[in-house]
Image 1 (tube, rainbow, N blue to C red):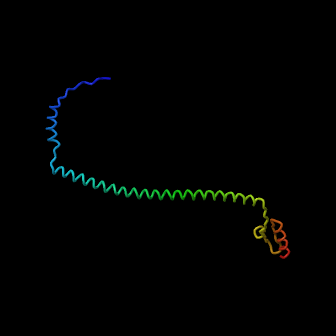
Image 2: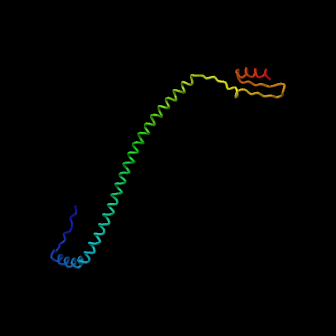
Image 3: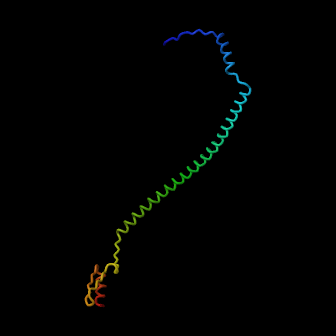
Length: 144
């Protein structure tokens, strides 16, 4: 570790020089001090006013935040309930589809499955697509 050099210092000389310098540099008149006091007072007053406004805004934001958190919690609960209901509906739908696969329903819509084409007044061409339509067409053919 390096040792520093020793410096000799005479306190009596520096105090006298320092006192005379500081008296000239740091002295303020009463008017200057009063002006500075007024400036500080107005600055403190404006900062205090701004602080109160910011405090009001903070309280309003905290209240809004709390309301939004409460709404968020309610929405999360509702979303969970909807998810569960959706799952139940999907299961019920799957069961219904399975039940309907087992049932076979046979139906005949005569109007859409039978076509009659008439080429001449004496002869007719009949096209039938299933047995129930054929019997209907046979009856119609004899009536014409």
